[in-house]
Image (cartoon, rainbow, N blue to C red; front, side):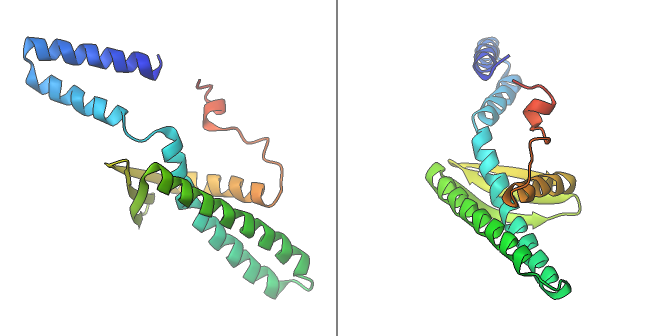
Length: 165
């Protein structure tokens, strides 16, 4: 069932509840409809990237400091990490520009025991995103491999892994 079909189904259900006068169910379905028209998946991906990229940059900086003190010839390794950090910085700049263009603003970030919580505004709606620590670690590792020029073709996306269309 696609989003358009769900939208029609909910609208028909709302009309039914309105006509029979069931106010509670009508209010509930309006909330569901409001939720359905909030942030799109592209918006969520932008916020997720906005949260992950600074952590990736911090990891590259930390690794550079460690490598420079513990290796005899750190220059080639530092050059690779510097190039990866430069690309990640460019991506972060692009993500921020796209967020401004789409009207998305992250106004609060909290580090919790379970992960990272972000509160943001997306085209006037207040949204909340929670990235669990395991998800953050896995996504950051994949992004870092990509920035370092390593092959990430063996990693499947969520849609490919669970065969979502």
